[in-house]
Length: 310
Image 1: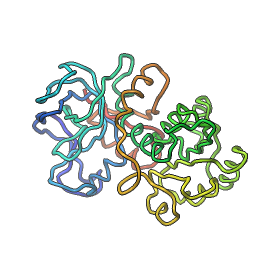
Image 2 (image 1 turned 180 degrees about the horizontal axis):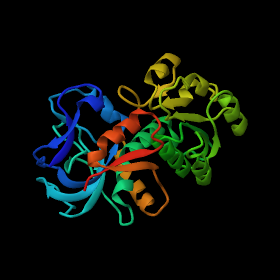
Image 3 (image 1 turned 90 degrees about the vertical axis):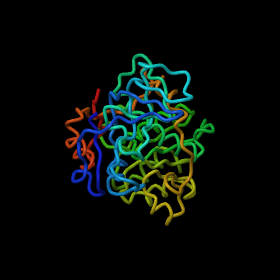
């Protein structure tokens, strides 16, 4: 099978290779899928550079959709040919960016949800839900005002919808790419840059109750602290260093929150019904992976990048 992987650590564009490898064999509790689409994420490039280093070679691709083509011992409730989606294990010699991939956790892909849209969901939904749960939004946010900073990112866009589903009034900071769509969802949107804290508190009529930071690290965390009553009212899923320095909260390695893949089936169903989405910027063939990496590393992808494989 074709797979995208690396044999040494370094910058993704230098070390990744599209090559042939043996298909993985599902172990107990696992399934294997014929991959139709695989989402690309900054975490993939971090893996190339040594995050969670282990035996090489290693694959990339952390989220996939496809159809079941092999079933491991002890697995029930799924059959060969079933369409599924889920997070792909990434500690082996291949991962999701391959013609076949193993899954430890999976959910049915509902009718009406195409493979590319399905592959865009797992990482954004899990990260957003994990952070919002840690912040307390998912315990019930009726009457609370929640700021989502970086709402135009895939995680931020998901977080806006999840917070609103739990009853929050959502304020969002975003650029112009998705500002119109975010307003259509019901968020009150303002831009980045000078005066952002004042614009946010002006919209809110005072400090917001909670702030969720989904933006790439940009030094904005001190500004977010100006929008809340206490640093503990802010949680970031990106700027861990500033959070530790400033007394804010963070969700990620060593931080708060537990893995939240359990909600993926729910949001897949909503997506199939047109009531939830993660914006897809581009889909590319597996052979065009280098173009996808370049777009991601540019910081200007403006949505999820997805490889079409099957």
